[in-house]
Amino acid sequence: MRLVVAPILACALLAGCTKVGTTGAAGTTGGRNPWTQPGVLRIGFQVAPNTLDPLLAANTSEDNIDHFLFDNLVSVDQKGNPVPMLAAVVPTLENGGISKDGLTITYHLRKGITWSDGYPLTSKDVKFSWSAILNPNNNVISQTGYALVKSVDTPDDTTVVFHMKQRFSPAVNTLFAESDSPYEIVPEHVLGKLHDINNAAFNSDPVTSGPFRLREWVRGDHISLIPNDKYFLGKPKLTEVVLKFIPDENTEVNALRTHDIDWQFEASPEEYKELQAIAGIAIVLQDRNENEHITMNTKHPPLDDVRVRQAIAYALDRQKLVDDLTGGSAVVADQDLPPFMLGYSKDVTRYPLDLTKARSLLAAAGWLPGSDGMLMKNGQKLDLTIVYNVTNATRRSAVVQVQAMLQAVGIQVAIKAYQGGLLFASMGQGGILQNGKFDLAWAGWVAGVDPDQSSEYMCNAWPPHGNNNMFYCNPELDRAEARALENFDIPTRKKAYAEIEGILAHDVPELPVWWPRQIQPINPDFKNFAPNLVTETWNSYAWEI
Image (cartoon, rainbow, N blue to C red):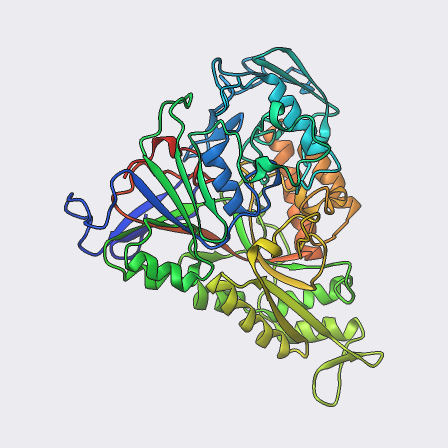
């Protein structure tokens, strides 16, 4: 364990290594902080949700809010170990839940679970939720894994049998689990007869099964949640959860300082040093399968030329970006998978800062300096637009630095800001990334507990069928992904992912900038906060304040 700034503790990038440190005097003597409202947890979110339907969630804010209201079949704990939620046990090869050929996966649901309107939650709800994800009329953001299910049987109310079209090793960590698109189960008796769920009344006033239920939603301001007294894991200890939507991160930090919130959801790295100086808060550094990166729209010329993408990689001083913007809370990334993940490769193309190499690649692609030093080809300037979500203070500074770094090699870059709810929305909701309305994008990606990245990079994962916002396609990578997904043994998967990482590093459809340790500033009176590698709110039923 390495001391970063006393008394904040941080450790190396190890799966499940979550750290808590306390700053200031308050909260260090065991006495209750005077600003704490016992039983009431107040959380600051930058991005207000577009919907409370978990099948339509399009970003981490919506995913985490949905976890208060609905449950997965299977989750994972703080260390990444599978935890049964709606399922009574986690299916494995050893317990027979996964058939020997890997083509049949059987879940046994817990008995006696009900929806908030009193209806029983049954296997039919699971089957309907799967079919809703595959319904082309619904604005779901990814079908990865779900499209590999041939059929679903429900022999009784508590048994669900998934029949796979092919072997899919991440199935248990994907199907209604903590994947990169962690869908939860929705009620068939409410949504089953609709042509589509996009505009259902349920989306703003849902029937729920999770530890909390909706009390009120004041659009753009706050959501209030109250306990589900009949929650199957026991009545939650909190009496209320108030989600406050604060679209400016500096305002969020001030809300922490004035103790108007107890937790700032996913603070950005640029705020780290300032947060450490605020008296009476604790900081949790959450290790996740996550990266901060620059997405390149490979269907937009000149980014369809790999030499231009590689030149951009050589032109950016990523170490400076990390040093200037993360306050020591992140590490420069050389690939999307962090070192603690299965599949991380030590043998990939790396892009140290090299302006000479960048200019050489651009010249080879036909881009030569004009009279003003900016690059031109066939009378056209190399002019790109980079987009980002305006609420994130770190990204707001990052895009300005990227603009200056690329201008140094003759690339002209315009900056365009969007609200996160629009930038990250699904294709059907008009999302900027999913609809390809950008050249470059500064964004982050929180993946699942499995190294599976097929929903990001495979040819069949272009929106609306996945998260391949790069519009990237390489058949060689697809073949390696198939080997990784069709085999259950670790050596085969590890070799396939090492090949995938090598292809991605060469092709640069996106440029990883750093691996974050997600910063979570909290009131020290907030107890049992134990974010897993994907979702912070997975165990909210156990929280106390």
